[in-house]
Image (cartoon, rainbow, N blue to C red; front, side, top):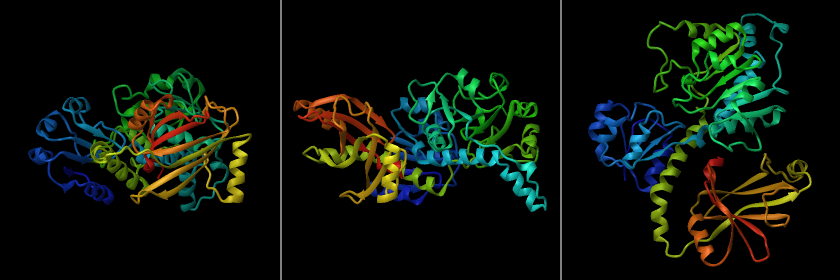
Length: 449
């Protein structure tokens, strides 16, 4: 498979694709027209945001099997037309979600504590303590609009701050242990801080406008690490002036070009932007929330993993005559009276590196790939082990969950529920002859890195 790389990325992307058997060509300088003239020679293309892949481009790409965008959104691609032509669209929101969550948290903490203002004052010889008295996040209600990869990552970071976290999303049943899903009206009624994590689309375009802001019951702080187009800047500035919006953390701006690489090509700054850059209660960064050393690696590896799953794993599976079953232990889950205290005990006395879920043990599989096993205590009243009444449940790693469950069903094994799929893998459940519930996991280990 020949793949054209038109944006620079971490070297492991190209090396990873080549290890799969792809032939990779680089072209970081040709015009869109020049790329169109040769795209028929390629089955894959890897982009960030260099130019828009539109209908004209796709009509030229007569042999294209996939478009991989090294990022979260697909707004630079004519998605509908690509799907009509049977082209796989691959993105990597898992790769920079942690970076976005940390950045959003860092921005609001910096704004609340006047860190930028205080730093500049000290550098100019001013030592103003009372003028820089901060406020605390604890006790606040944080509203999140858009509860996908990025929204969930931000909510997870907030878990230790004793805040109420609520979210609104156009999809149903997206809430989790870190956040309660509510109506948009409830977000507007309760939020002290609002964080935007929506994709680029018609619904999100200039969503945060005068009417939207006016519907908030109390003044609030705004965070936007999603897309600049979600916020009408003129309306935001009016709200900042009237103190309906108490402050803003903006990693993105509606003035950005499609490539995200430039803001203005001349010195004619819009009046609203001129206000933002001079406002002490506004914190700005140049679209770098997902732009970390680590995310650069994760984004690249996520693309490689997805290309492998879509185009190469099936071939490997066909080459294996006998279906693989369990390949390792994926997790040990057990009930506990107080999971939080138990995790702390294991952390203190046995050196477990614990998190919300327990701890993750890393090892390498027979192909020398990183693999993980999870250790997790659950509350005694958890329904997760049902219909088993036992106090434990094992999770086993498998290569092909769908095929294995089909085989097990043919063999008369009791299947529990339906397959569920997440960013970190697919899950299915069975019962053994003694009523023990067993979780089967087809993992995506890279999502945890």
